[in-house]
Amino acid sequence: MQIKLEKHRPWKKWASVGFFTVLLSYAVFSLSNNSTKSISHSNLSFQTVETGAINIYTDAYGEFASAKVRLLTAPAQGKVSEILLRPGATVTQDTTVLRLTNPMLEQEVNQAQGTLAQLNAQREAFKYEQQNERLTYQGRIADIAAEIEKAKLELSVNESL
Figure 1 (cartoon, helix red, strand yellow):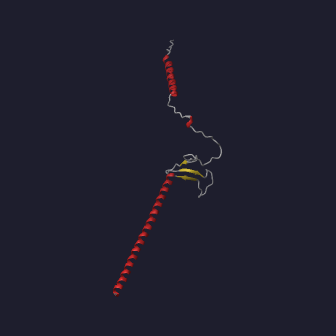
Figure 2 (cartoon, rainbow, N blue to C red):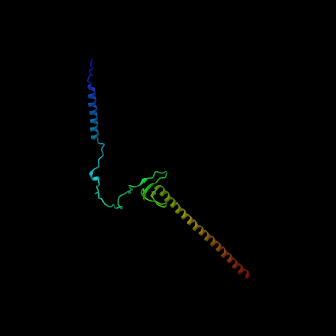
Figure 3 (spheres, helix red, strand yellow):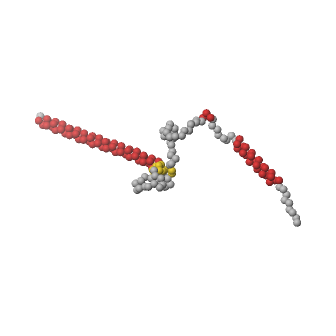
């Protein structure tokens, strides 16, 4: 019986040692790289965190966003701004379950209201312009009537002479 002895291959050992060395040098290079951003301590501002009721009025810029606002999965753009009743609550036909908001629709409504106010102002201006024209026309008629009366008086004076 012949026993085959496998020759020991030292290249696998050297390949794993080389791979580990390359990996270790890459990690050292990544940590020593100056791509890490830093901020000086003087540019930071710190606030103390307190628990309790929150004051909804603040001097900060921006706006608060509710944690309960959810996007509405419908073809219309909108958000659920307030959930009035939870699942399992008794509802009737007139019960409001959710309040929905649509910022784009609100903007369109505001634009339409502005256009309506502008058109109403134009209508009122046109109405006063027409009233002014009517009064001007009536004034011209009164002037013509006065001229006729004046001419009649002159005619009567001239006839008597």
